[in-house]
Image (cartoon, rainbow, N blue to C red; front, side, top):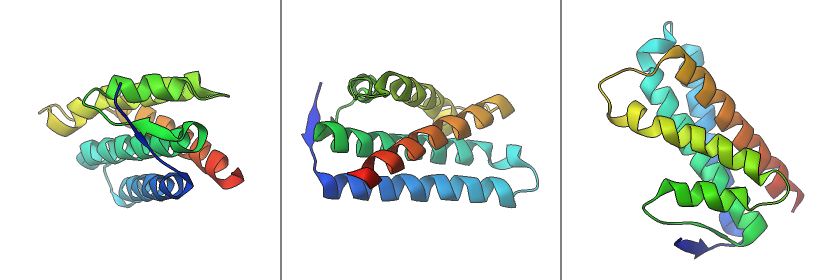
Length: 135
C-alpha cells in the first residue's frame, strides 16, 4: 500500500475540500427541480467529499493517507483508525463503489444510489470535522 505522509495542515486542508464538495452536492440537490437530472454529478461530488474526508481523518489519526491506484488501499487504511475506522472504511467503500457508475457509465445514478451516497459522505465529513476540530 502506497501512502503519503501528512500533517495537521494537510488534515485541515483536506477537511476544507471535503466540506466544499459536500456543500456543493447538497446545494445542487436543493436547487434542482428534479434531482435525477443531476444525480450523477451529485453522487460524484459525494464521492469526492468522502475521499477528502477519509484523507483528513487518516492524516489526523495516522500521519499518512493512502496514495495509490487502488481505492481499496484508502478503505483498508481508514479501517485501521481507532475508534470507528471500520464503520468509516465501510462508508468510504460504499461511495467508491458508486464512483465508476456515476462518473463513467451511461446509466444514471438511481434514487437509492443518490440517497446512500449523501448519507455516507455526510457520515465521513462529520467524522472528519469532529476529529480534526478536536486536535
